[in-house]
Image 1 (cartoon, protein in one colour):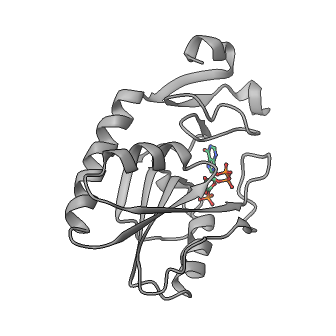
Image 2: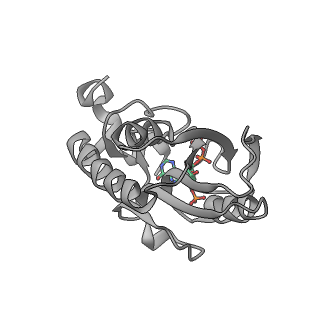
Length: 184
Ligand SMILES: O=P(O)(O)OC[C@H]1O[C@H](OP(=O)(O)OP(=O)(O)O)[C@H](O)[C@@H]1O
Ligand code: HPA
């Protein structure tokens, strides 16, 4: 699927595949350095972080283990409900482990804030966050994020894992949706 197939659904490409690849390589190099000699567990937050996890993990030069959590706060809409549900928990006991949460986007920050306190209560040795995208203007909570790919404007974005009503996740780039698609 490419830009043309999405036709009038997309307004514009915000971040190209090439820009994403270059940024993930940069973040991976920093993570390799910061966790040198450690046994890092990267935790992908389903479903949105699938693409970031897959590409970031392959860009890393060190061995890591991977686990997944599925949480949902958005349902089919474009606003976070703030009510987070665990749909799938970790398989790993993270007590004493170095853990890096991998996200596609921090929007209001409500999902991540909830997730951080949930995982902190399991007593990991360290807990950090890597996100491809962040919307500073949308933040409802202040979260310290170690690795940020791109700060973006407060617009609803799709592609590279991000969906609108479960569509557009498989676009290789990040773009904005035309308002008529989501009733804006
Ligand atoms: O900062 P927030 O406003 O809380 O938004 C960010 C969260 O929203 C998205 O997940 P979503 O609940 O849409 O589930 P999905 O990953 O399955 O699409 C995204 O993957 C983040 O987890
Ligand atoms: O801008 C967004 N797009 C898709 N999913 C999202 N989840 C939070 N913010 C977004």
